[in-house]
Image (cartoon, rainbow, N blue to C red; front, side, top):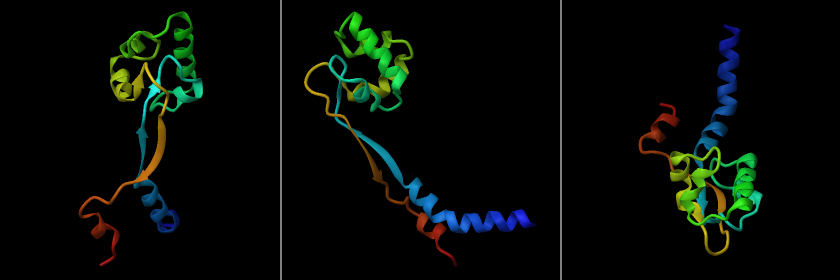
Amino acid sequence: MKFGWVALLGWALLGPGLAEAARQRTQYTGVVNLNEATASQLDLLPGVGEKAAERILEHRKKRPFGRIEELVRVKGFGKKRFLKLKAHLTLTGPTTLKVEKVSTPDAPGKEAAHQKP
């Protein structure tokens, strides 16, 4: 019974904060130039970490990318991962990728679930 009260108290104290955090999503805008981007710029891509960014740089040292589709030749980048990144990849122009946290509106009917009767 003691655990139930602790859980209830934790939910009451943290619930609104957790719900607020759940209402945010990450939005990616802009592109990354595969042939000119730095490791930190490549790391901004969704699902690409520091190690994957380093693998892209190593591949690029051997041979610059001729097409964005050549990313699948880099270890760890298959078709699925490429398709998720495709909209944010380019070979021309500057790297302009920006990552922002944006609030999302509640789904219809959610307000009723948050209110007490």
